[in-house]
Structure formats: structure tokens, C-alpha cells
Amino acid sequence: MASGVKPRVKVPSSASAGEAVTIKTLISHPMESGQRKDGDGNTIPRSIINRFTCDYNGKNIIDVTMEPAISTNPYFEFMATVPEAGEFQFTWYDDDGSVYEEAKAVSV
Amino acid sequence: MRYKTMTAVAALVLSAPAAFAGGADDDTLAIDGQEMVTKTTAPAHMEETGIDTIMSGWHFREDDTQSMQMDTFDNPGMIFVDQAMDAWNTVEGNAEKSCASCHEGPESMEGVRAVYPKWNEEAGEVRTLAMQINDCRETQMEAEPYKYDSAPMAAMEALISVQSRGMKVDVAIDGPAADTWEQGKDLYYTRTGQLELSCANCHEDNYGNYIRADHLSQGQINGFPTYRLKNARLNTAHGRFKGCVRDTRAETYAPGSPEFVALELYVASRGNGLSVEAPAVRN
Amino acid sequence: MDFTRRETLALGGAAALTFVLPFRANAATTEELVNEFTGGADIADAGVELTAPEIAENGNTVPITVSAPGASAIMVLATGNPTPPVATFNFGPLAASHEASTRIRLAGTQDVVAIAQLEDGSFARSAKTVKVTIGGCGG
Image (tube, rainbow over all chains, first blue to last red; front, side):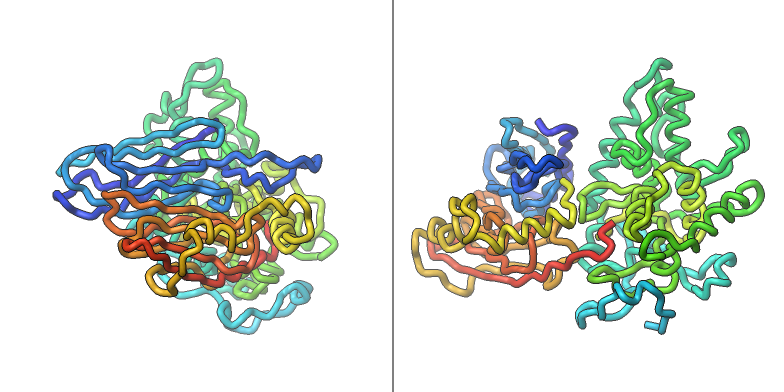
């Protein structure tokens, strides 16, 4: 696992049923592209977060396939419909097999 | 844009492409709705410089970069503030203390960033925020000091700085700090390196102009530590000083050296009256 | 991660040398990637919107937004990068709009392309040229 990985998410704590809400996510990660070389000329192996998903009460909102061209500290902004009270689940999948998770409850 | 004296730097300055033309913009910076002072009357000690308005580096950036700083969440620098929050509460060192053991929450640091660097009577020296952080770590916590311009230091500076966001920079330059301030001023106007450039050649004589594709700012440090798009991390003021001096093709002073401490005091004083913006977002 | 100016230039250089360097021969081209996504279907010019700056102050962090009402997926490609894929956004049943924003890396001035698969299964394409400036002092 890349060191110091820290997810941040911004969602409203309450919404009315059926309301569309804006979600923002940011996670600290170097997103090593696999294109760079170290001081000795050796290629630094790729190490990125390759997938991000956001679900609400088990139903999917967005599922993103991420490539090395996503910037360091990946940022996403998108809109979700909140049909009833429940919980957002955010998941980031690292190349090295690590999974970073965050959850946010929403009242209606 | 008013005419400015051409110096050696002129050779480096490309004419600006049309889309970039002009100096600092007139936009207003509000962070989460809180308005910042990003342009104001220059402090009295700058009378001889011919600069009557001091401006945050924010004004010299493109709209997309500017907007990243206008929302605390969009600002990637805040990731490191979160990391420093963990460090704040982490017990380290032989005294088995954390920052929180003495200072409680980081909000107790409100106002601190605005007045640093600051004369420390007991130590008999001007201290930067970084020096004070390390003094706490070594003396109070009996822990290892952070490397002066390291990531954990930049993050801790950002956490402390953000408590003063919106407050006006107000560093003292008189009294016991006067000698250090004078030393910093001398350094500001001393040409260094093969290019023989001083801080003033770029940031006083040519702000608003282009140095290749980069828009020269007044070199204000009210936004430091700053998240730079270039390296996607927080950059300390001393780290930036080092980069500037190196780019004049000079051997640079070390971050944390007495020279850079003096320079920080002087440069900070040129921003007296601007809001603390740290962690700002810059190119 | 840190990209020094030299490394960023090297990235751009690698992009320019796509047809010369043998190790690049394995990387899928933009055309291949588009065909893979669409299955070779026709692509309309309307139906997907791509928002990107005309001039990016730094190629390391370029904000983009893609939007395609009703789309099930939107693929973004940076045609001038050493490897063109950037991201594919797949929208689920609770997506309130088929729009997403992120920040991407561009190795130099180039076209960024968005291809969307629309509600009826057809495809739409949009492209934007983004100029990437190279800093002066770089620090």
C-alpha cells in the first residue's frame, strides 16, 4: 500500500428523497505512472489507483477505470440521486491490491 | 500594465501570447465564501520600491488554478492538512507528548501564522514557524526534529497556517527583529549566480511580465506552504527560495539557514496586510 | 508524484517518438482504443461534451469535465500522451447526471478526446485541443 493514503469525500449530510446531490472525492496517492526513471536510469514501476467506485445502499452511481494519466491525488466530482436514507460507499482499488474505503451516511 | 525597468532578466522574458496578456487580474478570492485580502496598499517600508499595491500570487494564475483554491475541498493541499491533523494528535518522543498534549486542538494556533517569523526573546533570535515547530518537538516532546523543508514539516505548517486563514499578515520588523530584517532586505537585493539576478529583479522590477511561459508574481509568501501543480505536493517558502536562487545558477543557501530565515522575515513583511492564504494553490 | 521539467519533456519526447521506439510498439493507439470501445460502430459528433482549458498552466494537473446525457459510459483519451488512455466513467442507476470531473496529466499540447456510449447504444465523440505551457522558473 502506498504510504499515507487518505481519502476525503464531500457529501451533504442530509437530502430530500429523490434529490440530486454533488459528490466530490480526493485521495492522496502518488499515481506513479510507470513512465518515470529513477536517478540510476531504472524505470520506476507503475503504481496507481486503477479503479474508483461509488455506490449508495448497494446501488452503483459511478465506476471509473483509472489510468496513469490521472493526476497525483486523484479528484472526482459527480452527481448522485438519493432515493432514501442510507449510506454512500466509496472504494479505491490500488495496483498493489490495497483497497481504500470510505462511507458517509445521509439522512432524508 | 505599466512599463517596468528592463534588467538582465529581459533576455529571458518572452513576449506574452495574446491569451495571457496583461498583468495581475482583478478577480476576487473567496475561500468557502470568506473573502481574502489579495490586493492592498503596500506597507510603509516599501515606499522606496515604487510598489504601491501589494498582490497575492493568486492574481497571477490562470482561472482553473485560481478556482482550485476557492473551495477547501477542491484544494489538494488540504490532504496534507488532514495528514498533519493525525500527526498533531500522535504521541512521539521520550516525553510521550503530542502537539495536542500542550496545545489541545489546532485552533489554539489561530493568529500564529500571521505574525511569523517572529523574535523569540528567550532564544534571542528570529524564529520561523518551522523553527518553532521543531523547538516544540525537540524540547517539549523530546522527539526527532522534522527535516526543515520535509513533507511532514510542510504539512504541519499548513495545519497551523490554515487556522489563521483570512487574517492579515503582520510581522514585526522593528525592535529586536530589525537587524535580521535588514539582513533579509540585503539578501533580497543581492544579485546571485551566473545570471546575476536578485529577488528584486524578477519580483519587484518585472512582476506581471513573463519569464518564458511563467507569469512572474510579486513573490509574496502569504500562501505558503503552497500546493504546486508542478510537483503535486506542499512546498515551503524556503524550498521555493532555494529553487529561485538555484535558477539564477547559484549555489543556494540551505532551507533553515540563518540567511533564508532573514529573507523569510523580509519577504513576509512585504506582504504585511495581505490575508494568510495557506495552503494556496499555485502553478 | 513529482515530475521535473526534464521528465515532463521526456514524456512529451516519448510521445513524439511513438513510432520509433520499439517498447512503444505495444501501446495501443488512439484509433485502436476507440475501436475497442465502440466495436467499430459509427461515431456521431453530437451527444457528448468535453470541457477542458484552452491553455493549461501545468500539464501535471489539468481539470476536465465530461458530460453526455443518458450515456452508460464515457471514455477519455489523451492522444498525445505516451499511453493515451486516461479514464472510463461508467454510470450506474443512481447517477443523477451523466457528467463527471477529474484532473489529468497531459505530456504536452495535444487533443483530448471523449467518446460516449449513449442510451440507445450509439456513440458520440468530442475533442478539445489543450495547449500545455512549460513553466519558466519551474522552481
